[in-house]
Amino acid sequence: MLNAILILLSYLLGSISFSFIIGKTVKGIDIREYGSGNAGATNTLRVLGKGPAVLVLALDIVKGIAAVWAARALAPDLIWVHVLCGIAVIIGHNWPVFFGFRGGKGIATTIGVMATLSLLPALCAGIIALVLVALTRFVSLGSLVFTALLPVFLVLWGKPEEIIYTSLLVCAFAFYRHRTNIVKLLQGKENKLGASRK
Image (cartoon, rainbow, N blue to C red; front, side):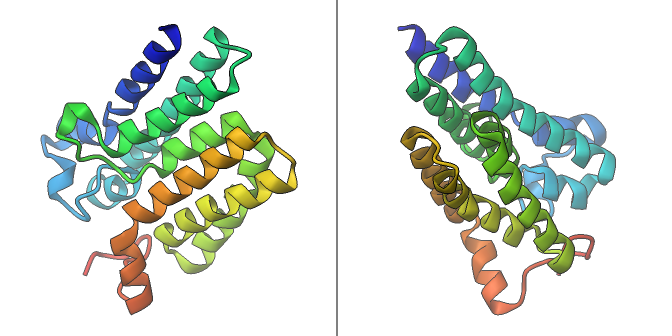
């Protein structure tokens, strides 16, 4: 019962949309009605600016960290509970019950979850993704590469299969949530970081 409650609470934690809350607080707007329509840090940057975007990014990462930490504290020997709480918090971010199931794309929360489950593989994937974003200015491309590389590095590090399977699932989430971005990337129409939206 405790484990089920932990997983449910992780989903509810993920369902707290900081992008929506900060959009309402700063400008009195629903961030999902502006820019890309996504309730995440990148759209917050485009619509509200750097300060709110950094805050959203940090809080969304913390959601992922907190869910896994709580699971580790209360079920220290049950890795399956750790990974299910991580998956639940990402699902909550992507499909939040408090906001009509219209959330973000889950990358910041995925960073928090995967870095807490396995820091070094996540760090290696993250560095490559950041370099790619710096070179191309395509945040979506960096996000996709980050999630795609996670399973590779986890296998190379010999991490538990529960974490590897989790990385495959969150990669599938990321590609699904970025499906329109993938089409735009292939068409050469994706918006670059710092560029005005077309």
